[in-house]
Length: 243
Image (cartoon, rainbow, N blue to C red; front, side, top):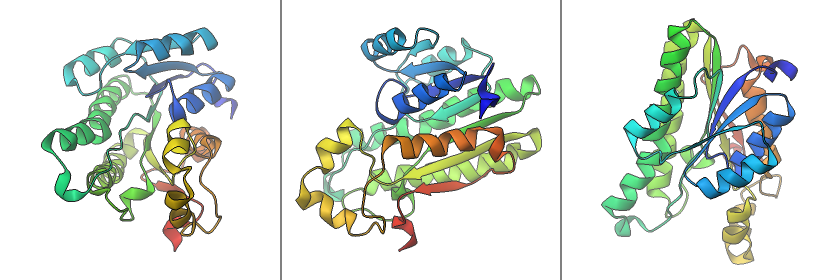
């Protein structure tokens, strides 16, 4: 996968969790990573670890600020829309504020960043690849995840629609749909057996995903090894969606 040498890859939500894992792996593969995150502190720590990365600190909920920030780091060859939020609550307790936060980050920001990057790719007649981090929740109902499921379902539909439109321009768009991932937050939320055991019982491989499981799927779809793959939503779920 040495085709990342000399390539510029924008990763949103790059400073922690899956985003950190993607950033680390891309640096190892020779890419120039443009790390976007809302936390300037975590971006600073990331820069100390990987001095060659470029940082952008911006709130993805701000449409115009995000577009300006992304435009400032052109050219971009590849994009990983990783940033996301998960607000889990009973349907009848969902507030307008929480609904808007979920959709602003999980799909509106994905739309905005992707549009900005593709505008540049098409204007320069440059091929590219984009991977959106979706979820198994886009295709299966999860208890008290009504807003999250809805937002990730939108990510999948968006992925297919944009892939159709820009395939002729040699711009590929795919999604990765993980099950529960053992990030720091994932361990906190899912470590209790009372919560984890019912979910594990639905996963044939009887384990949650490691960060590396998701990272390697993303790297494959970004790379030229997936040159004939676009419009795909790839489960990384141990068989959860097969049941």
